[in-house]
Image (cartoon, rainbow, N blue to C red; front, top):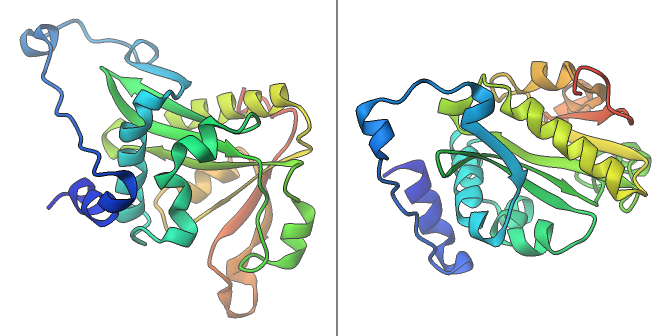
Length: 219
């Protein structure tokens, strides 16, 4: 069973049994069209209701594949309710990257800071809800990585936070056990707390802040 199928079976009741639609190759793909540049292959845009199934599949595959945690309601409830979590609130957003009609990457902003527990109290105090834009669900399918999609997502999400107004900080956390995650974020953001250095190792995650306005490395 594929990761997507396993994930879907576990949350089918919660999402109403959404099904993935297998895309048929176009004539250009079957017979060989001129190679497109990355800028032409990928379109990064705000998600619509029609994108939610594809976005959810990317997220669940990442949760089961890269993060290896499986679906945990207290951590991943937003994945089930993407509409209510990101599309409906005015100061939140969900972006998707589309390639040949398929959602291959996601990225989101939520207007909520890290809570304590499980996060260190001083981290929660530094990034209060309401004035903190939290970057989250920045996931790219493995076969579409190393094309700059994650960096494009961060750039567009930071532009959203600036335009939304009222945000004083951009926060995120990452799991350093995911290959490439820690060096990627260290290239764009400033470390706030590495929980691996806390007594007992904490949650093993690293907390970061992205400066506003964003640094040139993101722009």
